[in-house]
Every structure is written in C-alpha cells, then in structure tokens.
Image (tube, rainbow, N blue to C red):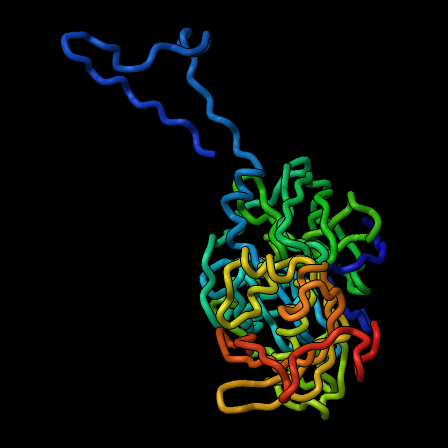
Length: 401
C-alpha cells in the first residue's frame, strides 16, 4: 500500500485532534429379526464404499463459536471519547489496539448488558497493540491466536462494533501480507491487508479465520476505500500480549485540565474536579447516546440493577434526548448524585405518566450512582427539588425546543 496516509479505526466521538456433523446411530436389533448394524447406504458414493466427507469449516460457524468473547470499549479521555472493540483471551484480560485505550481516563469494557472497568497493563503505540485487565471477570468464549500467518486468498472475518453499532460480522479475503503503511503519521510494517469491511469503532476487534483463530486485530485503512483494510498481525501482537500477561506494565493516563460532560463535551475540570464526576458523566453519556442510537443492551449495561431488556426497550424505544446539562455533582457516602436537566422527544403515548401524549418534555432529575465492577453506574432517579420531575417544552421558565 506504499506510504499512503491512513486513518485509524477507533471511533472518536469528539475528535479534537483526532454446525456440528450429524451423528448416525446404529439401528438396534429387533425381536426375532437380524438387522444390519448400520443404516443402508444413502448415496451412490456411500454404496460404492467411498468415505463420507464432512462439511468444511466456515466463517459463519467460526463467528458463532467466538462472538461471545468479543467486547465493546467505551473510553473517556480528557477531551474526547472513543468507541472500540476487543476480545477476551482469559476471564480478565482483553486484547485490543493501542489507539482505542491510549490516554483513557475511564475505560469501560461492555459485554452484552454488563459493564466493568478496565486498566491498561500493556501498550505499544508503535505497533498499536494493547492489553487491558478488567475489574470483574468476563463470561463467554476465550479467543486464541493463530499459530501461523494466513495465506493470500484465505477467507477471514472482522468482528466488532463499527460506528458504535451492535456487534457485526464482516467477511472478506486476505489481499496481502507484510504490508507497510504510514498510519496517522507513524510508519508501520508487518500488517495484513484484507477486504473485510470495517469502520470506526471496529478497531481492536478480532480478524478470525475459518477455525475461529485470531489472525489479526482490526486497525486502520483509507476511508472511502472499503476494499483496503489493515490489521495488526497475530505474529506481531501475540508476543507483546504474552509478555504483558507475564509482566504487567504500570501505565499512567495522566491528569486532565477538563472532563467530559454527560453530553460528551469537555467541561472545565475545576467545575467538577473529582474522578467520581468524570465516571458518572461517562456513564450518562453512554446511557443517553445508546438510547438515541437504539443500542439498548449497551444503555442497559450502564444501570446498577438493570431491568429486563424487553421492558427497557419498550420504555425508551422512541425516545431521543438532547440538551444534557449537569447542574451539580455531590458525593454522599457510597453514592454520587448528579442533578441533570435535559429534553426528551418521544412518540405520542410515550410521554410522562401524567401527560402520555406529550412529544417534547423538559426533565430535571437527580441520578444516583453506586459503585459496581469499578464503575459508577446509575442506581436510581428522582425528581430534583420539591417540584415535579418534568414539564412540557415551552412551559413557563422552560425554553421551547
């Protein structure tokens, strides 16, 4: 691919710089009759004594076997937040690419409707590889690295969360090996080129072969050219990851002059100076953004004691929330309280209980957070102050949308 400038595929939300074979059982003996020990031949090949052949492995089968081990990253930094992908190699270790988690102040690993905090214990920006340890163990499949490089023309599939969408499977072919490229100004080599479709948010997700083994990690590519995607090879990533697994690093994310508010935009750190505020804001940002995007499992993963997915979806399916503003943050013992105002737009019949046909509502709520799996998650909500929790848009003292 020469020295073309390429883009990393971490999805930056505020880029301020940037089947098994069938088993046939023998037929049993019947009373008084001699029955053949096996079923009669069912095909000419079988009748001729040709051995039966099993179906070759497929990418679809491989995907079904490993998908439970692919996780989503939501990472809040000082001035931007990012979405990425990764995969579990043990109950508490997740492999990904460096640009997804680099400088992350709050690293959240989401598996289905469960969230846990993560800490970087190994990172190499020159090869774009990282290893994250989770606070709580993950369920699901553990993925393994392939022991050999794929061949040009081999079928592969990229698995991840492109553009922050739900888990996606994209099949393709290996176009080339040992590629060199200039990625965001950094010279790279030993890359795998493939034509599996990937987008921002796919970064760090596994590229698997038909056996479900990881041959690479989704990394970069030229936007607008879907047939040319690059992956960090397992040959490059595995030695680094195994080294950090044996000897974890201490990685300092530094401090921030600003924090990301509940709408994902920077606020002066002096206004909300605590790490609890930053974490609570990150939870609110993911929660509301996921509702707006229709990604209800990810939204549900931000609740300390989640409802069922079906009931949660029914309650917020038509909702779009805007104008999120944090009015105050307080710490009370083992809880954090955020006073949040925002506007919701919803279908008729989905408005507040007292005004079900209302389609635009202004809310003033206290969100209470409790610590779980290393994160401050939403435990409850209530009206802020003595008045009701909401009023119609355009009501007295409330700006029209």
